[in-house]
Image 1 (cartoon, rainbow, N blue to C red):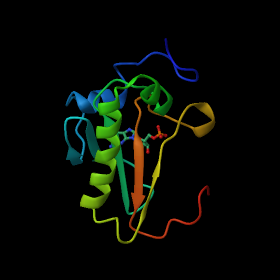
Image 2: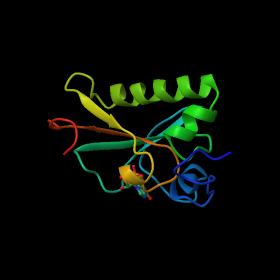
Image 3: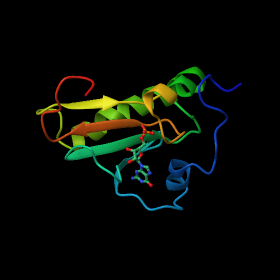
Length: 124
Ligand code: 5GP
């Protein structure tokens, strides 16, 4: 059953196509659980997207349906990516949009990592 807010997983979404190698990306990291790549329209000096390998439309879908190992592996990858990008010492922000009020554009769960400058407080 789909979670509220977004429908069934759409295999033609842009991140599914990146995962299949149909669209190029500037890869930052990859393991069994996650792929990370630089955002095509960066909103900070560092703006990387981390996506799970599995087919989940949103954080709601992911946390409802993914196996514990997928969830652990994914969030460990988020931390690893930030560390490898040398963002730990200066600090960084992660963000995940979910559904209409958030403005989520791509219906494949993803976490944004922002860094490389002071980011201000919370929501702009
Ligand atoms: P959302 O609004 O869904 O949280 O964020 C989607 C993000 O995906 C946006 O920041 C947008 O710039 C990025 N994006 C959309 N299409 C592509 C693409 O083809 N390649 C890359 N690397 N990023 C994309």
